[in-house]
Image 1 (spheres, one colour):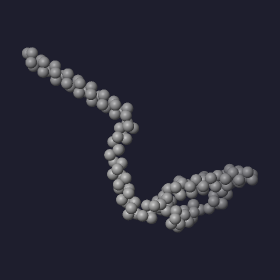
Image 2 (image 1 turned 135 degrees about the vertical axis):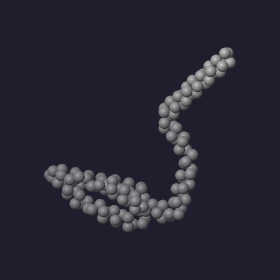
Image 3 (image 1 turned 180 degrees about the vertical axis):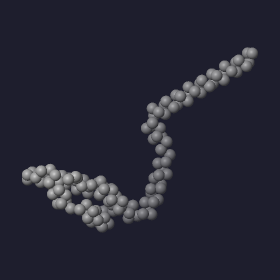
Length: 141
């Protein structure tokens, strides 16, 4: 038996508008509870596969758990409660962060950026030298 798909539960709860802190806590607690149930079943003498099957039965259906969590509006995030404010806040946050994106990209890619600047400088130096030589040849002949 395999471990229940807690990642699908997490994704479903987030899509339903449950606050991320509540989703993290729920998934963490369900995972710990599942592990405890498996450990208890193994301690009573069951092999690992049977213990996992029993733990899944005792834990219950994740879809039902998800439905019960999404039915509670107090677990929803602030963006679900105030969608117009969230739309404005998210837009303002994106506009505020937008100028920092090139700076962050430059810091993250500093070695590549340094190589590019070095190559551009070197190619400019070679081009300027060639133009100077051509100008001298034209002038002196």
